Length: 355
Image (tube, rainbow, N blue to C red; front, side, top):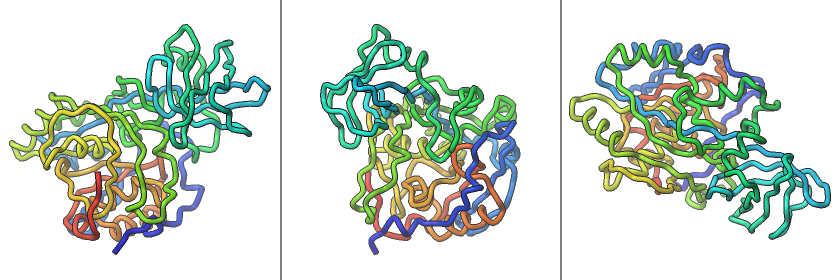
């Protein structure tokens, strides 16, 4: 049976979309899912060290979010909002443009410091821009940019977002959206995990603004994923192999980690890899790199909801989401989390995923 995006719809009251982070990162609620037995229980994220075992390995995404939202004006005076999608060079990027009339190739966008961004052309739905500034683009963003909060957070970013829409272990600049499962971890929680013998490791996947784009194709087979750059290093690969050899479990912290590890798995074997991925994981996909997933709650009909459905089974995941709505969990980037232990149902449910 061909899967459709409408197969992944659920009703979400708007008031459950978290607009602000909690005072403490690790104060979130946690929905614990055992897909093999189709059971769920309401827990607290602070309980995570007790829900894991000594010898388990948590894999985090250490990408750092750039202040990727800029404001400028066309030469005619019209306002332009620039949301960087990907930094592609020292002075170049692809971006979404919020503007009344789309600029043509060669047009200039004037920025607040007197520099300008030149439109080089199109890259699908995005614009290719060259920033004509003496400073590298990353420095320009630090000076002029604002944190790119997701579109479902209906307020302007403030100073708190500069800290809280960033993981405490962020170190590799390049993302324009946070790997949100990692936002729940503070230094105290990481210390408690380490004290219990739970190890950690990092990959890098620079999350692009394309992660928020709605799927336009109705059939999943017709959808093309956006590209994202990742790096799975040799040290991480070695830690994963050693964890498996001693009987430990590999738990991905966030769907970006899943996409990175599965992209780096060739014929089911995890190997070092740096490059782009367009992997699209949906029910029928057979995972080879992870034994569990900690993730936030995702948008209806989104590719991320399809990924977790591939891991735990669509019907069970949608039941869990209905439970989360009934229990008033907080949704999306600043919301609560779920810890998923997978079962066989997800890999048997439909067709095949693609990469």
